[in-house]
Amino acid sequence: MGGHIPLGSTSISELIAQIDAGKLRPLAVSSASDWSGSRTCPPGRNWAGRGLGALAGDFGPPEMSKQAYEYWNKKFAQMVQTKTWKETLVKNELVDEFMSGDQFAKELEKDNVQFRELLGTLGMLAK
Image 1 (cartoon, rainbow, N blue to C red):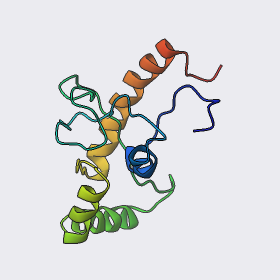
Image 2 (cartoon, rainbow, N blue to C red):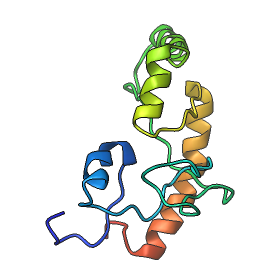
Image 3 (tube, rainbow, N blue to C red):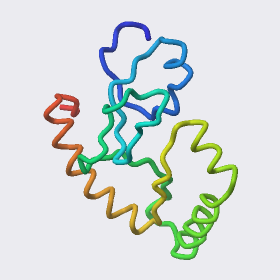
């Protein structure tokens, strides 16, 4: 928005106000889900069907106990069933791709390999 950064990558939900105000233009959405009904992302500008997606998540410390890990997995699984969660997804144009901790960790491992290659190609990795 200041004109000094040519391209950025972040959660679209954080930028909806700027997009609606015409201050930013979305180029693509890094979701493996189809966003054809999105008001902020033009049709055909998502990663749907390309086997790619950007995951966001909640993380705990490496020394987290098994009991705490299981507690939080259960709480998050309950949270994503609530009406408030579902309304928040719609309001912020988010896709519900909830995964449990173990499944999420496996997906992150796969994504790290893909994104390291993609970001390297774009010259966006720290040197």
